[in-house]
Image (tube, rainbow, N blue to C red; front, side, top):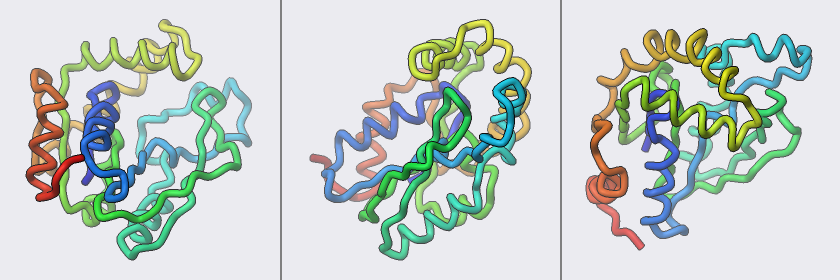
Length: 199
């Protein structure tokens, strides 16, 4: 199952709600965010100017290869990405193939190769002002950023890339989730659609 939507839409929240409700032995998760390209060859100043919301910033080729490996019943080694330094750490995290694999990412639907391997697709549609506030809170707490820098990046990169590469693909979702919907209830509904029982 693929979960797509803009930055701060609630993709990870919905994915976690699904994971809590499903038997751990039947589900794995995979975040497209882990597949940002390594920028250790750039200075920190140069890394801050990179457009991380453009599809080219993600190693979608490796991501697709890993999705196909999971579908074939083989484990994968997912690169570990450090958002504070915009580099890969050199470590990996093992993901085991399961009956259900939940994947999430901002740019998930703009790649046809990714859409082709998703059995179920969900798009979360949340207004820009709400997403920005959530992004500020997350990036300060989890990624060591300051609020002004987050707002600058959002205006310069996030919003225009959302309009070009995220929002136009909402029609590829089998289920469109609105901003007013309670994600725990959406998770219950999705589990019903999958035809599997929760924990």
